[in-house]
Structures are given as C-alpha cells and as structure tokens.
Length: 353
Image (cartoon, one colour):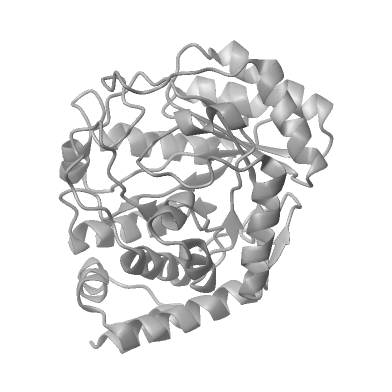
C-alpha cells in the first residue's frame, strides 16, 4: 500500500499495522508530509479549533535518584546543579501563574525521594485549597499504585509519565538495569486504573532508535489510549554517556506529532520546549501539524538553568510574564489563540477509541 493510502486510511479512522507504521515512518517524502500535516490540522481543528491550551510548568527539583543515560539530571552527573523548591515556593509560582491566567499547573521534578508521599499530598492539597478551580498535573516518575492513589485522593488530576520507548530492548539501551520498560508501562496502566487523565510520550531520534521502534510506540499509544501524548526530539547533554550522539530532527518530530494526531484524534498533544530548542520555529511547526498544548515555565528565574535535561534549553532567561507574552505572539503569528482554561481533552469522560 502506498504511503498516501496509509495516510488516507488513518484519516478515515482506520488502523495501521506495525509494518505499515514502519513503512510510513521510514519512507515518507515531502508530499507525504504535506498530506499528513493537512489532515492532522483538520482533525485537531475538529476537536479543538484554533485554541492552544497553556499549562504553567513548575520544575521544583533537579535532584534524581535514577541514572538514565540521556538525561542531564542523572545522578552520576556531578556537574549538575541541584536544587529543591519548598512548598511555599511552589505555591508562590502557582499564585503567580494564576495571576497570569493559568488554570492548570504542571509540577515536574526528577525522581527525588526527598519529596515523600506525605509532602507531595500536602503540596497538591494546598494548591487546590488556595487556588480555586485549578487542575494539577504531576510529573514525578515511577511510584507505587498506593502512592499514585494517594496523590489522586489529595487532588491531583493528571499525571505525565513518558514511556520513552515501547521496545523493551531499546529501553535497556537508554537506561541502567535498575529500570525496565515493563515497570514503566505498568505504572501507566496503574494511573489509568486510578482515574487520572494520563499523559505519556517518547523521544524522537534517541540513540539506537529505528523506524520500527517508533512504529512500536504508535501501537503502544493506540493500545493505552492516553489523554495526552508529549513527544520531543532527543537532544544530547554534554555531561552524559550520549554526549556525542546526534539530536533528533524537527522534521521527524513534527511528522510523528501529526501521526499521533491521526491515530489518537482527541488527545492533547504539546508542542514541546525541546522542539523549540532545536528549531526557532519548532513550536509553531508542531502546532500547525496537530499539536494543541504549550507549557510555559513558571519556575523561579534563578533556578531555570539548573533544570537542564539537555543542552541549550530555550526559555530559561525570561520572566514568567515575558514567556507568556512571547508565546502568545508566536501562536497568533500562525493563526492560533492561547487558552488558559483547565482544558480537559476531548476524550475525557468518554471513550478515546
């Protein structure tokens, strides 16, 4: 089957096999991209119009117990600058974000055991108590079912946990033996079972990745049916074992965004900071290819350059208000409108099939 026929099949609501996804990812050309982006734009507009949901991001700890080979926060990176925000500092970030119009706050950190379940629950419940009508997303890594349930009961609404790669062997090439793809994926199913709005995702162009690996990611997404899918290009960090590897490309990342939009029409899909880092117009390209979410940074200015997952991360020098205004201008330049409501995905409370 020709690539155009595969794209038409997806656009019409059909499903692709692993081999069909692999072929499309490995062998697409410029005309295939144009058709895919056109359809992804139409499908996104069907569910979200030209609204782009803004989430306020608070990166509250750069400490991590894990040693993932690609990450600048890995515990073996002795050059990493570590910090932890207090509950009061996190609340201050959220209050500032509320004044700027944000109604969803994403609390992200390395896997830092300093923040016990009791502390996380206290932070979540305090935000919910002090800021009426907001939604809270946690992105703090792998936890037990009981921990996830405690956060949910405290008021957390959403949880982001990238599966990074669906292929078990590929996963083992990116992570130390203490971490497993099976465990990672089980965490996602636990989160779905508890009732979270769940986000996952993967890196594009990570070391040793093949088109077949990316196709496996698409099959996994179709099976899991997450509410959000966040992908971004792999970007090397100079103080990791993967320092010499080439970064992922804008073209393939945007292609995968569009492919996800056709595969999961109702999902929330961010245009990520990593995409903006490798391409000055990366966010805009992602939005035009089907993405509908952006996550401006609300972290204190003096610590932003310490949360370095990869080199040359953009938007570390702007105040929150400046970042918000800049993003609005960028979105409006391509015909989109920033929206600061809670912005549930279109599949919430109904089947995402």
